[in-house]
Image (tube, rainbow, N blue to C red; front, side, top):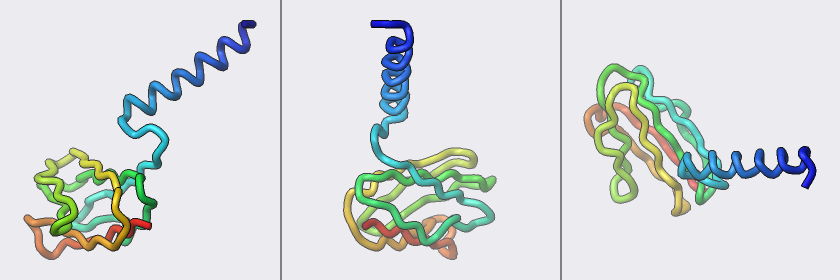
Length: 108
């Protein structure tokens, strides 16, 4: 195998290893930021099998909770939580600590 081909193969292996290390090979990850006691963006539409990562940019903990569907538990300030959207539907969610916060995740 020539040097160019070895670099291409090695580069491809590195990309696969990087995706596997993230724990989400082959699926998109969408970002929601919790900022100023709001979920941004909302609503968000994703495909089944894709991932949604919420990042808490507020100085206080929050949750991402859709009754019967998912619950992040407490997400500390500066922390993240990732959910894999496996079931199609509309999921209205909120923060159990701050009932005025709401968001919508649509899985197609």
